[in-house]
Length: 422
Image 1 (spheres, rainbow, N blue to C red):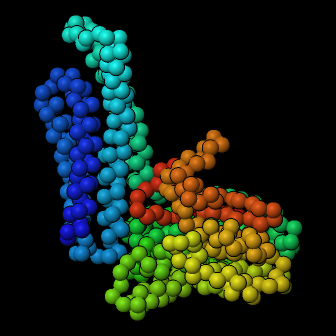
Image 2 (image 1 turned 60 degrees about the vertical axis):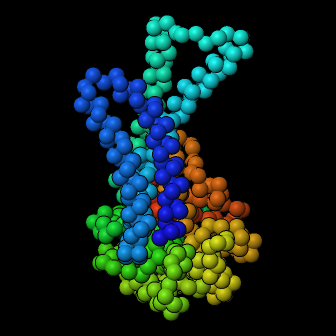
């Protein structure tokens, strides 16, 4: 309880400073409104929203022990959205208030250097200064509406606007029987974040099936942390189809590391239930092992490792153990949740031809248009989304099917990957 209060105090101070500075900018704009009732209503609305956002944080902090563990992620999402929706636009607006202050500061310094005393301004001059200030504030309001609209779209439509990304990759060593093999990859479902929106995900399942995959790969993070998040999802996800087979691996969130458990046995039971769910929906979960895929007497190796990430992420993956049965195979595919594993172990230590990864989500925010490819996640993961190549080895990083933390996607739609081998 005391720790929660300690977190809320700096949050309250921060929010108050932002709100006071924002209100300072909008106050002269409100004064221009002729309707007194409308002015008062807008002022009340401004401060009421701020109070409600802070009250939401208070309720969560002091009531978290009464929240079902898996539902905590949903409530955190609500708080993140409310804060982002009403405070990121304020940050944009504040920039224009600061511009006016900086302009005034420079003018004051300039006049001081020239030795001029500050004189009372004539009504006309004062009016011109107010007009310039109002223009800056109005521009700030217009530009602040851009992130507001973007966030609103991301949390309502963007997170379910599934995008199919297609790649064709040619390999000299691919057995002839596998020419034209269609691999569909999905990653990072985070089922608990969907809040039981079965109908929306069912549409994505239909879209996946429309791709008519030969092989369907799921590269980890089925849940946020708890096996109970899978409740009710089996009828939807068991509808996923693939001609040859459906295969999966575990991600960092699947191990239950982001919670305190009553005992090691309880944590292990949670993991066992997650593994069982993979089987329930028809996926072959590869735990540091190889599956041999045969077509017309020709074979390729599909290797699946448990999660391997750079600290603080767990390193359960054992690539040497997993690829032991792949020795001698002419062509190898690897499923590894974290793309950093490719640079750390796959490239320097193996001849694996094609690796599929996920994990980054493209940070659920970015720009991929007109030749621009950018997301803040690239400063943590240089290989964060799409196809990468080093000599004859390829990596594809899926941008994620679900979401976590921020319950939306802005400029980074949820992804269904289709890779055809030639």
